[in-house]
Length: 199
Image (cartoon, rainbow, N blue to C red; front, side, top):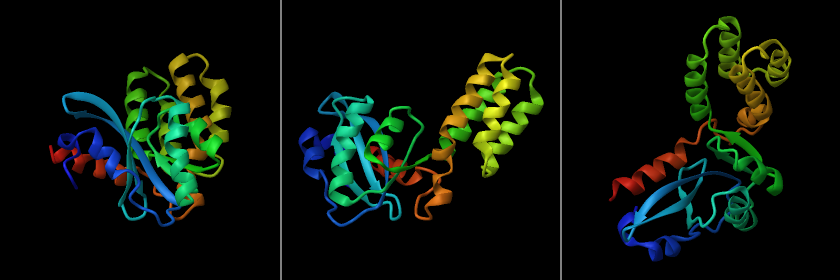
């Protein structure tokens, strides 16, 4: 891959949307790059099945509206039906507005949940059950988490975690509904890593 960090803003725009054929499942992620001495946020989109770079854009806004603007062109041009992303809350309104299936990167979620569970004292049975549900992702797991919410109201952080996971359940299990949707966003992160390694 070209050295996007040294090439400057014009090079990122030139890379643009290089892929023109249909890509139904994409991975999306953003990262901070230093271009011509200036820090900018670049959004990477890859074909989730092949790991091939689909496009890079400079992101002027990092809110949900900015993400809709960024990703809607890919959806329209390439026929995107599903996306895998990290667990930033800005992606939820995007997938709803664009009508996409969604998979939140399970590697990110499990790492974050593991850290959060370790920070909570006590509640060992509930923490173990949450971890088991997150690793097995059974059908109905989101409903079980919502029922658990009443039992963990005595711990605000644990309750918050249970509610968050329950609300994300459909996006944690997207890969089970769509065979071509990966469970992690590793394909996008590899492309980003290669672009930074070139610097």
